[in-house]
Length: 77
Length: 305
Image (cartoon, rainbow over all chains, first blue to last red; front, top):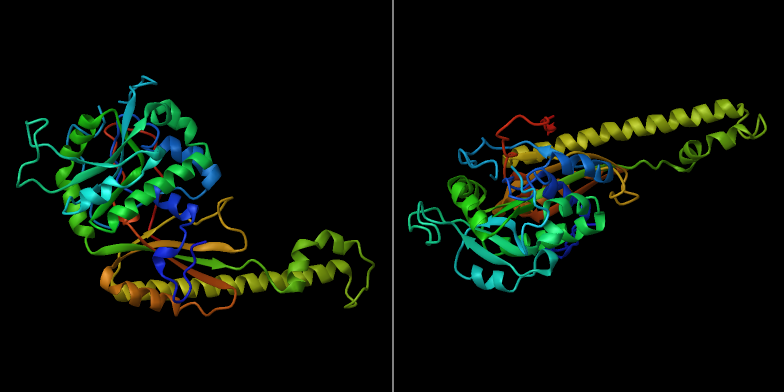
């Protein structure tokens, strides 16, 4: 467990898998890839993993949305 | 559109993160090991209309950190199956995270969602180039900050008698009437259940107060927050109790110690645990989900509560 206890350096703790999956499966920049659009992009994965992890959702953007998706290039072609 | 060929070639390009290229980053990347034991490299964007040429000097400085991975493991069909395999998923997640952490130690990093894969370097480079400005803006927005997780757990264990009532009510009712307190077994059981229920309610109320105080601490630092779904299921370590808060805050580096100290000072309530994790690369603050170009199944979102 990655519990923070007093005086323990943050970097030396093992990251809990569930905390990691919270971030890797519902956080991170979502850009359509060539191969995984229908898999990691992400509904299918989320559905299939939910029974296992039960904690995978999509976090809202805390900032105003940025124009990351170039027009006409958001489908991975 | 997705690739339908189950074997799109000998290798695919797995993207970990968008990064600020900088001095020394190349050396850092060269020694990293990523998913599937693969080496890691940097992909730079291309200048407009000049495929293969290096980026223009005035273009935003953004690169992808990538690995070449086997199509048999990261092709579409393979990924569908592998994502059901928790051991495989854990290995990939930890390898992905290790690369992101190493990058974050020396430059600005914008992690990508797990398993973003392209057919080849050119496809990945084109995707980077098309989104360069947005990635650049988000890297700038996140510079000098790190993500910290704050979780609150409420203990589900009670004192011995309460636990007894919860764990063995059926057994209790089989005992002779009048034992101990003079109450019938049913009434004694009911009384213990009420006490247990009261204890649970008290703790839930205290936990809500703790959550409010933590939110107050974060407000004091004016920190952006993302709420993750509450953690439950087989991956939760046993004995932690019920997870009632699972938040991520984006904390300026200079405030990190003070924030962690103030959150730690909130946690004196019996039966309630507060856990701070981090620093993390800003996974939870990287991006809203990509908007689909065509209607799809609705996505579940976590509203601010």
